[in-house]
Length: 459
Image (cartoon, rainbow, N blue to C red; front, side, top):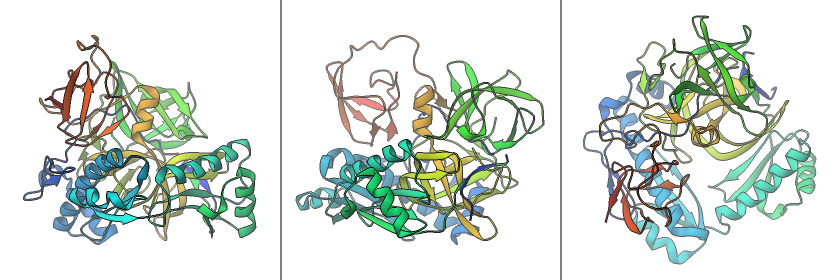
């Protein structure tokens, strides 16, 4: 099977700095999202989940509507708990995953004395030999070696949190061994697995809609975004370079690529003209559009669905985070590996769990007839890279969708930091005061605790 990015000639997906609008999936009746250690996040609303998304989960995951709603609620709770435990466990944290029909959360640690903390937070504790930091250090060494010279016959490598090892997929044992030697890593922490996988980029303002580059080639919109007052959308970097012009699904003039990175990463954003209005929606392809409420990242094992202009809606699960994959054009790092199928033209399209944006389609192998493996570029790093804000549904109690233009009234200083994922119940200091997190979110520049009372309560 050929490894490529999935452009027809590629589908573009959207990215932007995350706007935290109603980050709690608004509330499955009777299902609450428990936060870490005694906190409770807002419940998930059955009404917030698209009929199209539920139908795709039934087709691809074998879940009826009630089971799908329950699973999404549990997955949101798991993401919030895992984020809080990652901070509290510190260097002993060894990763998190969900499993089973109920999306039960397991959190691993290298320190047996931390198991009580994990179980008190509502997760199953697992004691392992290697921390996530140590394994990611090995993977980063492999990434550096790939930047020097793309490995031959080594399509994919990642940290497998369940196995507590780094896994290198290679066409042969010899190819995998040569890659490890070139990177100078400890082979005792690595499993080399034989694989015939050949990912490729899926190449051939609403997430999943088609757009066309310079009059030829097609990709898909990931998610509508804003940069200040400029509207646009996030997409895959392999779909276009800076200056590439785009036409929309209706072949009308649309916009221009303002930033693009590929290979290395696979993200870009397009600024659109005044004729295109960004909506917090993902195309449901005949089953009703899905409303985007935020971008809380899901954990390994969580369900995820994809929208693209070639194959429409398809669902699967997250297999590994922070994966590296080699396409013919070069190595891409930091993508998420999934069991969702895709085909050329789906590149850049939207990945979403419930109503939380996850990322944009990069590439993969296989197809939607026989099945396949697909990789997405996580959305939050894309937003941060270009200073973008995700367009979300928003409510009067949500934080602003763009950072405030005036400087915060509090002086800087304290433990709060932009780019940090905070779980409900977490506490920080800023400007000499202490604040408690009200909604799980990833902090963005300008979202200081005093500036966004929807996210932080002064204590």
